Image 1: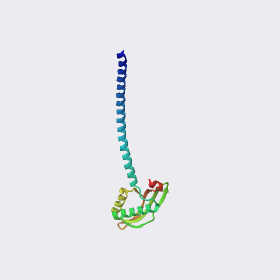
Image 2 (image 1 turned 135 degrees about the horizontal axis):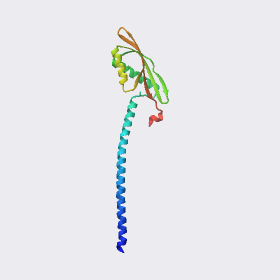
Image 3 (image 1 turned 60 degrees about the vertical axis):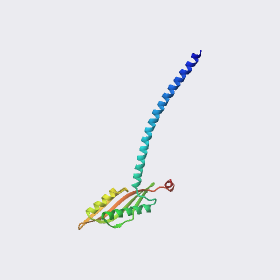
Image 4 (image 1 turned 90 degrees about the vertical axis):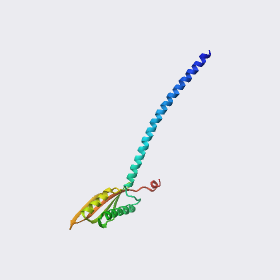
Length: 165
């Protein structure tokens, strides 16, 4: 009688042991897959943050129209003087507000040679802040170029609650 009582218990114990090993193997495979997914999503998260930082660095800083306008004026003056373009006058920047985005356009009258004008245009294109030339009117007189250029940049003006986050 004793073998009839011990044998079923031993068989049940053996089946439970095999089931727990199979369950552990399934869990190991599941955790390996989750680990690979976690690595993928960590990389994707890092890439998204880098892209966001790149986008944020490409917009004009400032929380108000006045600050944004001052920043684009300063940037245009700096680019002009570093490339040898002489600016005759800067007109107050125009802006258009759409939701929390501000489009700022800076007009400038200048004098340059063809080489300095090309360097100026290249520096606008290669600048960390995303700027775009929206109009360029050039006249030539005695080997000098004079004209007017309009340069546009973007800024995001956030609400005070959002800035605190």
